[in-house]
Length: 247
Length: 368
Image (cartoon, rainbow over all chains, first blue to last red; front, side, top):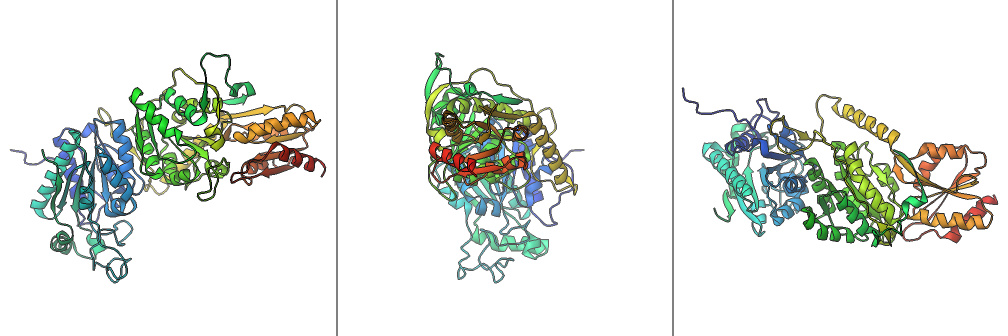
């Protein structure tokens, strides 16, 4: 009998606390698969955010550090400077990275820190139950934008982080992917692989932004959320490579 | 270690061929590098600007890392990361910058990560000014960040003592898995004095928290969040409190100056104690039996030393003098516990209590 899939060693066999329909589980698995492919599990240090993925260390099967809200890039900077040969990544949500941690991500990227950021963009604050995020699309209703995010009330526009970072000289790879269907999931894995490869080659700062669902706080069924993600999110956040300095 | 420090311990051996004239900030960096500190993350702020500059100069030669962070917030979190990864690490700032670091300090204390944090205090509140001040005592000793935690707080009064305490701070931090704060001020940061830099091997502790890749062992997690079981945070806090009790039982350092026959015990720490030493000498010339008790560790506080002194019959009262409006005095009062009167004299925001002002205050108190 031919084995067509194996459970990644870099992830623990345990049930996750994420809501049914949430994208985090898939993203965790993709990261774990790539780490196993690189045979780097024993030389990987991950940094968990504050947000729904705060306990990511319960699922990943390698060394992990927690970080204060938004500070994962600073913590990863400290870790990578001590262990320059290790694979280091931060796992951050949109509130963590694009609101409270904006300074940390911009400056880590600008220094060309040799860690990878996995940026999970589900357009809303998940753990705190559905507040407006910096990446909330215009018109989307949240608990703190009950009439929908709008410019009249000066809520600002959704921040496109890949594009924002692309102007910094030391960013070498920025790609936006999506957890929606096999094609996009495979594309996401490929992006993570490339980002980790560039990191290990010491090229510069790498980030993969992953458009994701938060069906609970979007007030949708998992199926409807998946449809909404594909129909509305890429219009605000175009998927694809935003910056790649080349092989 | 319960240590009674002598005045001769805190001044440089001028006869030594190793004796150099050095600014406080610079001596602190030299001592840190001598103590094998190899990671420094900081952000510019007066009056400690020589610190990052000197680290930037020295680190390449020892294959160390210097990063000028985008903010104090980022710097302290880089310290968190480097400490979690097993690096011997330090950051430095001054009052407003230390306020920004408080979130990270709380996390570092919670995660029990060893590191050294220097605060060269300046005038506050707010942006204040860049003059010497001692108004961050509460922030340093009573927990500037959230949660029940303690820093080990060391308060040097001379450049020599600053160098010596810096040198020992790293092993202290690693021994106890606890952040250590070096609490100085603008005077100590900027004063230039003779110093013999400490040298020699420092002790390293092998800890099982260090994140260096899980080769041949189970994965490790550095964390401060404890959701399960329901009492996990309480259990973690109990563990921290037990550690703090052990530190308090073992670690205490203070200086006694002319205390044996003293009727009035003046008490001050850091730069302020330098003036108090002069006040004691001047007062004794005028027939006043003055003495000084100077805490070197501000936390743990040398409570029993104060208590024992307060119980001496000849002691009439204590006078706490600070470059603040009364912070150390609260610990003095708690230690003396009503046994003798505890008075306070202080200025802050750039004002430094002068010798004649303090003597006048003593004479006023004596006439009451």
